[in-house]
Length: 284
Image 1 (spheres, one colour):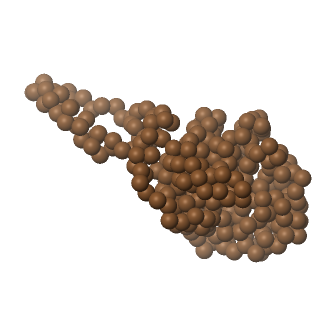
Image 2 (cartoon, rainbow, N blue to C red):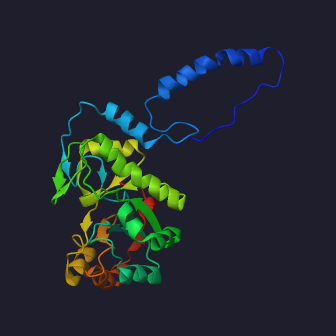
């Protein structure tokens, strides 16, 4: 959003005020010329429907060329040679994915390990009090995991049996709808988005950027949707290198993610690694 500035007022009476008034329509016209296609409008928040319409028009006729987890524009690493690793935890919110891995979260808090939490709107609805607590904890930052946890497509492509967003308008709703929800609850608009399943087409990545979101993938598959056993989670984490982004889940307490993380992180710390949030470094 562009900050609303107080108008400058001419204080003399030499006729400058009249000139300013005369030029005002031309200034407005110039603003419309240069800013008319932007979803964000100075001084007010555009409606979700207006953003849908504007971006649908902007991307009309364009056909995606790529589909997957690592399409052009998806950031999979931190841009640094520092010995740092970013833990990212997804909370997906499906009927079987609204749980809370309390053991994992408690370990991170106890050991003061920062992480970026990708939260879906349905998980927020199922865990409103905990969500506010996590958002207020400086160890964690909240990122956008979509309104309905759908793959990010402008043509309805599917991943893992989950139907993607069917067009640009649906994708806008998926991203912007949850961004506004998180912003309203926390006072902070998320700046990073990861789709449900972490699948995208290249145009969906462009739409995400137009909505003010970097798209975060991953370089280390930490728990495969919380299906890995304890040793697999541990081994995945111990394979991390400087700048890696690890994908884990915080919504399946029945899984073995927490146990694997608890096994691996002390060893990574012993090796000289630090843990950071995505916002701590540029993404690449």
